[in-house]
Length: 489
Image (cartoon, rainbow, N blue to C red; front, side):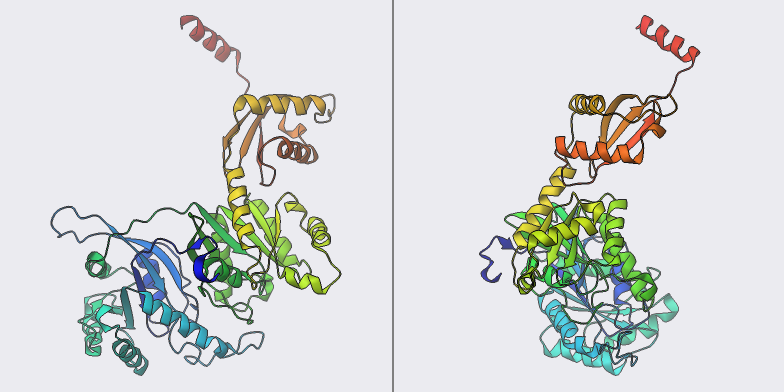
């Protein structure tokens, strides 16, 4: 990916605001408050945030500013806490892995966020007071030359009675400081005014919606974070052999041949009965939210392992949400070490993931950077399919032909009738069929009809939502009224 000579480009830059501080000062809560939605996982356990979790926010001008200044956009970045794995002595996870091995990776992510940011929010806990670690971080910011872009923030100032404690932040020689409460919103307006002023002198930047949101899901250690970094062309998220390293859903913006997209890295999934703590439960639900807000999902499977129950459960979730899906087989370079060919593995997938037998399959090596462009191309392709709308006339002609060739089996002398159909929505394509008796259209016939629609319409690789609805019968009075209305017209 080096040199950006293959069509991969960074996104249009926005001013970056990095949130730094020691563990448990409320950095994630502050990001959620400024973003006006839950983005980062909030939990009292130190070390929940590991990667750079970012979100684009709109910063409104202060009410007292003259004229009519426009809002400004910035990328707000939450970082892990310094000293994170020695804060409470919880050094080993439930599998016995040494979490201290992640310290260098987390502090590297903090360093990158600090260096790239135009503004740094250095957060302390007003209710705990200044600690030796707070003073160490403040010294690091001053000595690194970052002191002039720091806004010191005393969090957990839940009201005026706590302001005297919060003003202690001024002793760190990083400005007077601002007192806020991320939990109840106290002082947030003042912080937003300070942020607007801090980025006011920077070149204006517009934010646009990406053309595509691609969520990457899969079980633990399938290579999701490696794929994200390969797509972004930088070490955007932490890659580790320690299972469950990713907790938050991390949005990474980039461009491919002039097309903008967001790739969403999600926490690796395992059986719910194996969840170690509340954080893993929250991470699982963040993953489900990422699927809901994604346009397309890349289901990442490990070519070196058998399809598991976790893979099948994810398949069921994707079917339930009618999400366009690309099945991405990672570590395919290792298939060469076995007698299994890509064709054999493809057939194996069709047998194991029956509910997604229509989804396209791509073989990649995220570590080697092979197949990445195919993943992106297929994602845009299935999104285009899911966004297509078929004309009512074309749809009805096709359905009548299918129905005439093979209709539902009669039941107790009742014959199924299809009156007309209409595509009422896209993403997923949603087709409503008006019929005489919906119960006559069995699940088997619906699958047959779905397959025929995929063969004939440009929906060959995406889920279709079929709805069978009984045409309402009019009473004699309603029919007479409709007739009089037509006569008067």
